[in-house]
Amino acid sequence: MSSGLSDKKSSGAAGKPPATYPDLQDNLRRLDRLANLGLVSASIAHEIKNGLVAINTFLELLLQKGDDEELNNVVRREYKRIDALATQMLRFAAYKPAAFTSVCAHGLLDRSLRLLDHQIKTRMITLERDYQAAPSAVHGDESQLQQIFMNLLLNAMDAVGNNGEIVIATRNTVAGQMDIHIRDSGSGISPENLARLFEPFFTTKKNGTGLGLAICRRIAEEHHGRIEVQSEVGRGSTFIVALPLE
Image (cartoon, rainbow, N blue to C red; front, side, top):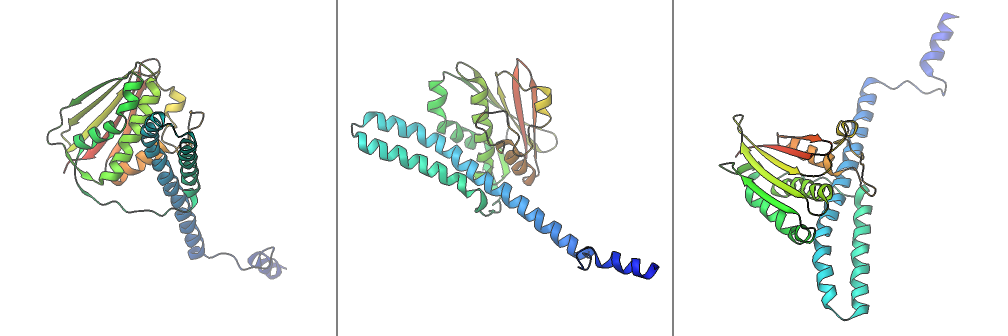
């Protein structure tokens, strides 16, 4: 009886041999790769959409000056098609390793702000720069760091709405890092949402993807840095990105 029971347990209900430890490890690794692929794919699509925000601003200005209604409709339709294709990239994009170089953080911040200049002026947002970090060169991938800056600046603009204020400040730390502060005068973040802010797919926005801040955290960590937030309801939020100096 005992040997029969032992044989039944080892063969399993379906008659298949039990999974070995290496098999389980391989399955876990595959699941981990799939999870990372999903996040990276979403990251790429999200950043394309961020770029399209700036493109659409200038596109609308050009279309307003044109008198060819048919052409205007074609351009707008193509813009929407590209935006839809970016969403479909979520399952197909591949990861691109970071290319680390010496990056001037102040210059990169200014270039990011220039892309958003029209929207900032249209919303009558007060923008203040307080660059005190010297030197301002950090060690990182310029394209990926711009993803962080664009995400945080767009979030700050959404938070302040019209007639708000955004302050961008930089400081060097004794730990050999640069702290980049992006502070907004918005309504702040509630404590329960603050705890989940960097979770993938968590969002409080009606049409948000919940990926922007998760992407920012991943990039910051890959740069041996960090990102954190300080917020008080009714008084705004400050996102702090710490990056290693060159």
